[in-house]
Length: 123
Image (cartoon, rainbow, N blue to C red; front, side):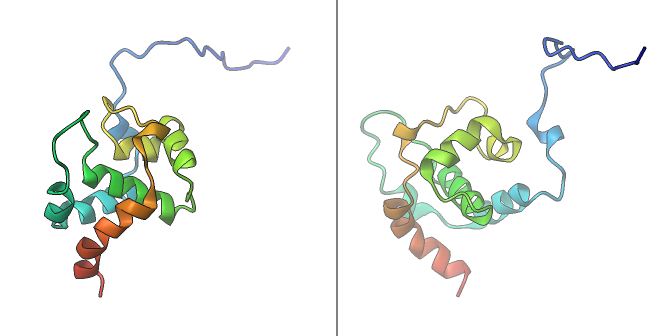
């Protein structure tokens, strides 16, 4: 008779889990957030008129794109899927934020707006 560890997939946590604890301190996502927090994104944020539904913050969208590209995830649909499946991608967005393909994680128009911010940091 073998002794196996029980596999209870319905086990509840005593306290809600913190994504911060699940990601190592030296993970690339923490570095990306640190770098993006130092960028001057006023040209990006000033382009939002405030009309319509609430927009995602450009810093979060830029972090998702940079991490996606750094890890070989170039498709906006794959990035969207990863924000539900991957701890690193979930760490890049607030828990209350639901990213959908309708949120337009489209690199082309967004990157044209980011060009001025990034060119000042990387010659």
